[in-house]
Image (cartoon, rainbow, N blue to C red; front, side, top):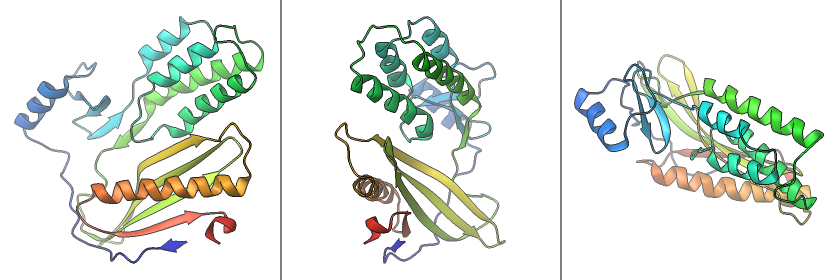
Length: 239
């Protein structure tokens, strides 16, 4: 664990889920309503937002229908993966699988419009099934428990690597005066490994590198400096 010297601050507050009708009307006029039947959903930067429960959610029903009309090729795989819009990386465990599969197809020099069969077809079917299940994902917009006062706020970042990919994630951990502790995923970043084979220690270092950059971006977006922790399971990286 690498512990920075920033002092923890206790002045973080968060806006509650309730907001005025003027705020809601302004949001709808600026970003437009999403596919909604009860007037609770709007789109913010391409992500669906339930203004009643104050949650971000995903709807890939139309994308799954579109994918089922395509032939199973490398071109189609790239087309579908590019349409999964996830700016904060909430769906990284899913998206990175598509990227890894695309890299494998490129490594085997599969033609762009060649029909995929066997294991490739099974993976494609599995990806579409998982994509549809992502409609159930709900991400709370508010990072804090609004009914209690935070007494300690920390950023915890994790990095890891494998032969296929490396990744970094940042969590916000807040402790409250009533003894409760809340942990929220802020964002994540993933990368497929380079085509040229690399050693695991080197890939672990690449993971630590993107974690340091991601943590810096998160800290710069916050109003105050807070205590940060960096985690990795690689002793080589720490040394």
